[in-house]
Every structure is written in C-alpha cells, then in structure tokens.
Length: 391
Image (cartoon, rainbow, N blue to C red; front, side, top):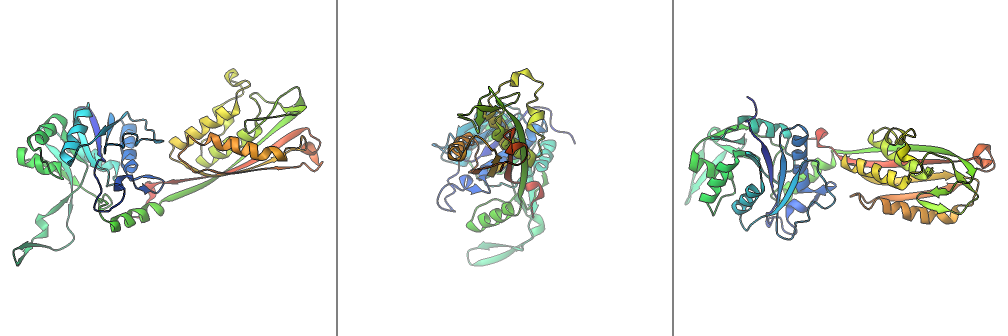
C-alpha cells in the first residue's frame, strides 16, 4: 500500500503539564543531551529527509514559545501555544498546519520509529484514519462495584501515537467534542466508526511515571556513542605576516604563511572535530584553490565546522590543543587564546571544555630552528544514537 496522496504535517503535542511526575513538565526534562520532546522532533526530521512530511508543528505551554532554543531543524518548523486541554492544544496545532494529512504524536513517547509513521501514512485515507495498536501481554480484569470479572485479552489492544488523519476531518471531530479526550482515535471512532491499524512497538512507550523515566534514561544511556578525532597542522614562519593563533593576534616579527590567515590552532581544532565526526578535513571544505578563502578569518571557518558538527547531533565535550613553537614566547597568551576559543562554542548546545598548551621546539628540528610551528589537537564528541539502542 502506498502513502495517501497529499501533503503531511507532523504535529507534536508537547503542551501538557506532566503533573503526574511532578516538577517541570516531563517533555522538557533533559533525556540524554536534549529535552525529551526533541527526540520525537528528530523523527519528524528523518521523515522530512525521506520526503514524507512537509512541516513540523510543535505545541508548547504558554511561556515556552522559545523552546526551539539551540535546536534547529531542516524541516520547516512552527511553534504554537497549546490550550488548557489536550483537545484544545491539538486543535491549535491543526490550525497552524497547512498539509492535507496529519500525524499527531505525544512528546512523552521519545522512542518512536519513523517506519511506524510511514506504515500509518500508508494506511490512511481521507475517510479512514490509522492508529498503532499493541496486544496486551497481561491478563485483564474489569471491576464493577465489589465484583471482579475476567476480560479476554485477545479482544483488547493498547493504543499508541502517532495517530494519522485527514486534517479537515479530525479538526471537525475535535470541534464537535470541545471537552475532548486523551486520544483522538476514540473521538474519531465515535463520529466515523472506522479506523485502520498498524502494529505498534513496545519501544514506543509513554513516559508517565518516574519508573518510566528511569527506563527511558537507561535506554538512552546505553546508546551513547563517543568518538575521538585527531587534528594536525604545520605552517612555515616568515617575516611580513601577521601571527594569528586561536583568533588572537600576537606581536611577532614572524607570522605563519598560508592561503587563509594561517591560524594553525583553529585549523588543527577544525580537523580534530571533522575527523571525529567522519566529515573529511578543512582542505576539502575550504580548499586553498578557492580565492574566496584567501586571508580568511579561521575563527569563522571553525565556527562553520562547529555548526556542521552540531547539525549532525554531535555534542562537543572536550578539546585539547598542543602548539609547538620556538618563538615567540607564547606562554602568557595561552589563557587569552583559550578564552577566545571558548567563545566560538557558545552557539553549540555543548558544555565544551578546553585545554590549550604550548611546548618549545627545544632547538630541535625545523620547529626548533623557528622555521615553522606545529599544532596537534584532539576532540571528543558524543551523541545518543537510538539506531543502535539496547531495547
């Protein structure tokens, strides 16, 4: 079965109070290295990259309109404020959407798989929505007064999100049920009486209790990926060139020769970051054959590299730099250089730690003869990749 003909919006319901868990709304708790709602938004981003959806609508509580913060998505994204009930919030999300069909998902279900979304989209038509369902593995009972009755579990299914609908139809359903429900599918069945279903996933559970939260944290922690990259650069020292190190101009009779400003520290750090992320090197990104990079400010190039790394969802946790130089004496400049480099990482949602050291050439070799400077850098990156999660 192919996807319903028409455009699609991914509506992420993140406006709940999360009162059952106490404290801040659960969807804004930090899970791994990002708020819980962002995990679902990343699924929307994957669907957008597959050409399956056209936009992401994030519904947030009043006062949380800036929730995107440092998180940027290629998928066109709109943030809208929710209401006092789920139904009102979803209605506002539908009003902000522009597509023919919608996927409505709970932000408290962070481990959604994009393939479930595609299965729902394939099962949806204008007159028929679709929901993911799960069998019950527990024996079930019904209580009436002081009597307990067995309920055949083969007849019972658990409902998950996202739920897929023709947008105009589900909007009418919610308008006709102003008090709403915790489940759009229930209201749809009351009005239209027909839904398609696809297999849900145990991984797509809803974080409702503190125990659920502990399970979610355990899943994310065991999916943590750590990489280390090594950067290296060497530049010749010559008269008549400015000496720029880590974006700081140093008073010196000799400067470094290069196509750009020859900032050897920024170049080594950039290569360390790119190497850890598997993204090639700065010579590929910013080739010396391109005249637009002549005398370029290498801090701007490093900022571009940081942006590339961040978009790949890497968290930059540690950078260590060792500069080898005979002259000039640079020890007193190292704290200044470290502070200047630290400022370059303010656009990254990472708590980056830096170590910047200088070593003498000890009068040995080309560095010891002050013919050149050499710089080594090591970068450590982390990210939580649920593609290889342990559930």
